[in-house]
Length: 349
Ligand SMILES: Cn1cc(Br)cc1C(=O)Nc1[nH]nc2c1CN(C(=O)N[C@H](CN1CCCC1)c1ccccc1)C21CC1
Image (cartoon, rainbow, N blue to C red; front, side, top):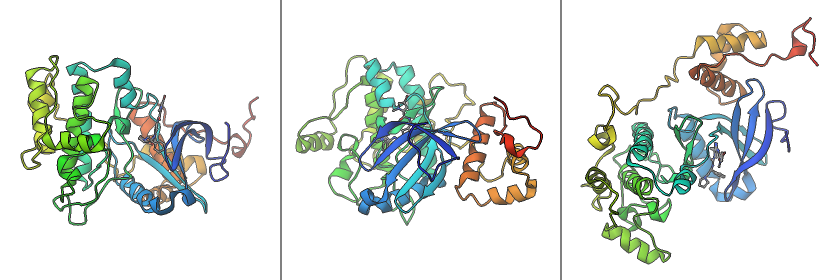
């Protein structure tokens, strides 16, 4: 462990910084009770300034999201000066770097990733959220080529549901939908679909469909909807891109149609519908995990069950979710036992 933060002492061991953005940095951490690696996003409240509400929004959004392709929030720690978000660690970094290293992906590999992006977006839309900043930098790889969507700081949960319009122009210009950059009211879901088109183009081509150093020219290119179609694109890929990159949002494909689009489902066994449903039933707690936690602190299962049912995103929530993640990966559902607390256990070494 390197630098320690007293708020984390004894709960997490801190290691090096793996990412730093404007007002935050992300450090690799280890959750002491399970030994699982986590990514801890550390924000200084003073530096955040009036960005603080964005972080509150990101935290509330991530608390309600539990999906195999959405980066999981395990715990939130707030001190006078800082906010710590304990998040899922993705050891293989950003999809952005994965594409750059390979120039571009084959159609099959692009489809493998695009399917997961469709699943994640369908799920967050179903939960009433639009991400509004979909790009390869916000998609991380875990150690078995599974994508995890991150950075919900710009997401929107429209008051009137997913069919009510938004105004704020935000996100990264090259991925922004025409209606969003022309200052019109827009539907977050439709803007996300456009960004998925830009994302799919980046996967298949290795560069952006609309690009220019001059922002005004970039906007004109986006609003024209005209983009180059390199010769390595198949007919079906071009058709898929056309349906995503429709300038008129009403003519753009919807996420529901994407879920059973032939290009998305190609070479899939028929039963495999894109798993947009979350494989996590966050509601009922896993008995084996609850029991292991109860035993390790000498509480009854009933007492531990009611503590965990509050979902207070404290250390107990993190311990439960990390144990549960281990169980999903058929790893042992065991906690590090504090040697001293069990009488008669010889303290090793
Ligand atoms: C880059 N990298 C290389 C390896 Br190997 C692992 C990683 C890595 O970052 N893994 C990782 N696991 N979990 C996370 C990360 C990074 N990460 C992030 O949240 N990373 C974002 C990256 N954004 C993309 C565009 C702007 C910033 C970030 C946000 C604020 C400050 C710093 C970084 C989380 C916590 C969710």
